[in-house]
Image 1 (cartoon, helix red, strand yellow):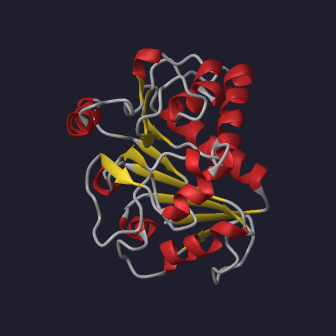
Image 2 (cartoon, helix red, strand yellow):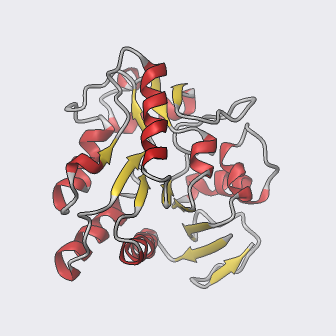
Length: 252
């Protein structure tokens, strides 16, 4: 595990963008797993700058998003497809045929999940998976549970997740109660994983995920077993970790 503790959100975003950029430059047809929420927005802005100023080329990459709300139309401004188009895809030269996001409007979730897994495998697997983490340590929408769900599946969202995500909606009642999410085995099968977190409210989840026991009640804890995990967090998110809080790399 490589751990970068940086000063603030901007530094986290720039460091993350540098890692994604290097992946694309090293392998132009990389398969990249993408995350949504407030955490990666700064990273997406930095990647857009790199595309415009440095001609970073996204034309050959394929992307797979971690999740999508269930029964939200793709054009709804709270859907994750809308989020990705607005915050990233509309501003780079990606082939839209290479964009993959679960179909939250499906009437056959079992089939949709199976097809999503098949698409990932047909693409050769994910080279770099970007993750945020919930305050309850969920990754993707894999909520605290009594077992690790391996593959893409329909999730009943935890009440804490619904409450946290309500800041994006008019009210907590408007937040969908379900989502389609990549499973833990799918995430862990990625060749590289990049985990991002910032803020005091993520400190406990980061501590439990990186230093606590590996249990499904703390979904992020499974990341301790990944062979190529990079974690970038700001000082506030690192406040429970017993490491020197500098911008240098620390091995845990």
